[in-house]
Amino acid sequence: NYLKGFLDKNSDQTIFEDYLCENYRVICLDSSNEKYQNGYISEESCELLRQALRRKTGLPTFLITHHHLLDKQFKMPKAIYPEKFEDIIRNSEISGIFNGHTHHLYQGEFAGIPYYTCGSLSFVAELNNEILDFYQHPSAYIFNYDNKDLKFRIVENDSKRYLGSIANSDLYK
Image 1 (cartoon, helix red, strand yellow):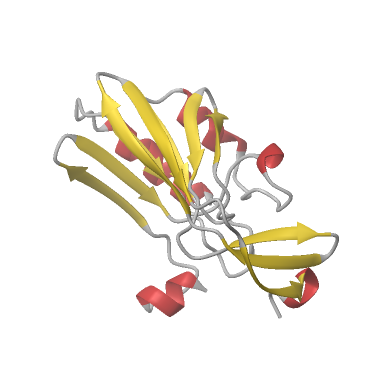
Image 2 (spheres, rainbow, N blue to C red):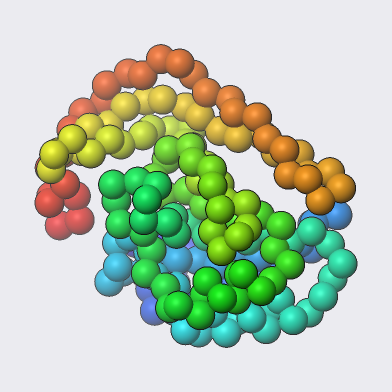
């Protein structure tokens, strides 16, 4: 799991960071959880987010999670989160939401806020029945935020190189 492997922290710890970066505010809400491979946002994380958003900075605020939040965007299930998470987002001044996990570019809205799933510079996985096929297919967004307008362009390599396959049921053994 990410927390143990990269941060040497227990998987039951909540990772939440609120940064001021030059002319932006970035809130990082970790959605990784050992028990929920597709992501989990806890009540505690919701409360931390609510408290952080009460502190007004006057800066554009961007929320980052690891796991995607929408059912319709990918075959993999979305992160699990309480209903109030969506209400907190909807009633906030968040300018954009970013995540990854699927390694597939996606753009839409979550709770009325612009929402982007970033690609990957490493690989993508495509679910084909119960088999995950892996390809090298780098892709990314380049964003520009100007006067409350979030603009982006997509940068991706058109070629895909097959790397291998694994049964979906074997992935998390």
